Every structure is written in structure tokens, then in C-alpha cells.
Length: 399
Ligand code: NAP
Ligand code: MG
Image (cartoon, rainbow, N blue to C red; front, side, top):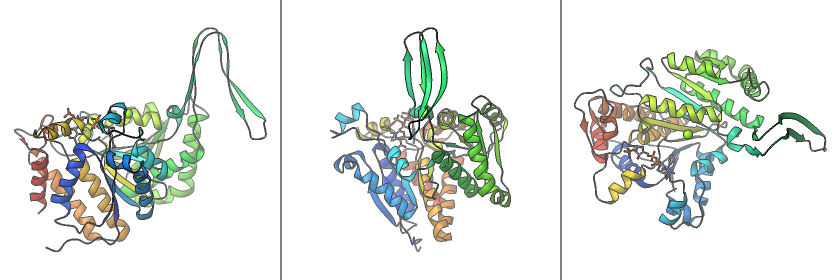
């Protein structure tokens, strides 16, 4: 059989621990036998990040600007324990944070829906994709404990020295205060990423804030979305047969629970943090959740939503058998290959991505799965496979 060719490379960002092991197996058994893989390889494994003073992460993000499509393996974000485990020169920042800062994107997370892994919410039939604004609000807030009676104000000092003041509270006793911000440019990027991704995936877009209470802060989010939609997207959405829909956050939550899914839900930073964990656990498993960073310029970086599955890796190192779910990592690859195919007009590559996804889903629906899914499936007597066995079962189906 002749292998499928790729005219333009995708950026390959290798990672850490158990997902690094899965990465190699996926390439060997599911990709390389069928596709003449054309990637520009960056090793984001923690050892190599440390050796290069994290320059490799920056280089991989810049390469993504060049080639537009990247696929990333899960990586360790160092903490105190990792400092000694890997003898690190510095507590390097989260690679995802570094990449996101360079590409200025929005992260879209969507569950992979298969029969036999049923969402807790019975009426959810299609995936719900969460888009989380990844800048500002409480994540870049300043806070203060107020020791006792006194006045708190917001003060803005303009470049020319003039001031605008807004009272926050006249404290009669001890309390707390918080100041937070966002910038129009970041909200605009967020809005454009959401509108573009909705068009890309032909799904209706929901956005919700609390603009009735937050008449300036949240209202600005609402206004920016609406202005950009009216000016740039209204017609395109109509042509695609999708909608943009704004409502209050509490109304959105109520409607989401009663919906059948199949839309994108754009959330402010905090709402997205909270709601993405609710949606992913209600759909069944973090191991079945994909994630893509979409920049307003149209760069795409695909990955799994879960981490490096450290606990399984330590078992693997001890020579014990593991049953780690590779589905989200496989779908990161298919997402990237399909996007590459789309941008290059490479139909064969797009069709391959579809086939690999179908083979993966069919394998599970036939009852062959990893342990995490076997524990929650409604399929009777599932066959529990180990990490490699599951990938080999998919390979067999794909062939
Ligand atoms: P994790 O890797 O997501 O794993 C947490 C637990 O979830 C696992 O111990 C396992 O449960 C279950 N799990 C997650 N993915 C699974 C899969 N594919 N198959 C089967 N079970 C799966 O989170 P963590 O252990 O808290 O973090 C490990 C490292 O990942 C950290 O160093 C963190 O910095 C990094 N991380 C990276 C990213 C990223 O690169 N995007 C994201 C999050 C975390 P059981 O042990 O019960 O089987
Ligand atoms: Mg969170």
C-alpha cells in the first residue's frame, strides 16, 4: 500500500511520562504505517526543556506560526517535587502557558462521544465544546485584606496625570477587596477565535456573562462580541446555517443542562475553568477530552486535555502493566492531520484522519477498551486491554 504524502510539515511537540510512551506507540502503529509523516520535531520533554533553558518551547510556538498546525503531547509543569526529580536549573513555566502567550489563542475543549460511555446528563447526545477566555479577570487580580474601618476606591491615572475615581466601599470593619482587569484587545481576539472556530466546525456559538449586574465589566464583553459579530460574521454564520446566541450566564447554565449538546459555549476565564471540569466529568472521562488552541490569526495547536498520567508512568517504570487511555492523544493527531489536509487541500490526509477516528470509536463500541473506560461503560463484559494492546486493536481495525 502506498503511504499518504504530506506536502507541508506539522509541528510535533513531544512531551513527558506516560503520554510520551503513548506518543511513540501511536506514531509507530497508527500513523507511520499509513502516512509518510512530515513533522518538524520539538522535544518538549522536561529534560530537554531544562537543557535548552526552555528555548525549545518558544521555538516550537514560533514554528507553529510558520506552519499553522501543531500537535502536542502532555508535558510536566514543574513544581517543587519536579525540581529535585529532574534536577532542574529553574522552575520552568507551564509550556501551555508559554505557547498560549506567543500564539494568543483560545482553548476549545470537546469530549469524544462514543456509544457505551454515556454522559451523566441523559439528554446530552452531542459534544459540548467549551471555549475558555485565557486572559485576565481574577487570574490577574490584585487583592487586599482590609484591616479595619476606612475607604477603598478604584483610581485610574491617565498618561497625562489626570484621574478617575470610583468608590468601592466605605468599610466600617475588617474585610476584603479585589481589583481585576481585562483589555479590549484580548476580548476581541477571544471573540474572533470563537467565531472562527464556530464556522470551522459548523456549530452554533453561545456566549454568556452577568452583564445585568456587571454593567461595565461584563457588559463590555457582551458588546465587543456583538460588535464583531455584526460587522464581520453575521453573513458568514447565516451562510453556514449556524447562530450566535448571547444570554445571561445563569440562563445559559440552565439551558445547557436541558440541551442535547452540539454547540460551542464561550466562557469568561473563571466560568470556563469551572464549567469545563463540570462538562468533562459529566461526559465521562478526562481521557476522552480533546483540546485545541486556536489563535485569532488561524494557528491551531491540538492536544489531549489530560496530563502526563504520572501514576501510570511510575507503574510502567517498575515493569508493571498499564492500561492508559490513548484516545485523546490519538484525536490530537487526527485533529492536526485533518487541519493540515484542509489547509493544503490534501483530501487523502483528511480522509485518513476520519478513518483513524472511526477505527478508534469502533474499537471501543465493540467492547475493547482501557481500564478507565471499562469501569464506567454500559457495554457488558468489556475486554480490558493494556496501553499497547488497545492501540494494536485500533491498528488492526484501521488496516
Ligand atoms: P493527569 O495526568 O491528567 O492524571 C490524573 C489522573 O487521571 C490519572 O492518575 C488517572 O487516574 C486519570 N487519567 C488521566 N488521563 C488518563 C488517561 N489517558 N488514561 C487513563 N487515566 C487517565 O493529571 P496529574 O497526574 O495531576 O498530572 C500529571 C502531570 O501532568 C503533572 O506534572 C502536570 O503538570 C501535567 N499536566 C499537563 C497538562 C498538559 O500538558 N496539557 C495538563 C494537565 C496536567 P488513575 O490514576 O486513577 O488511573
Ligand atoms: Mg480548573
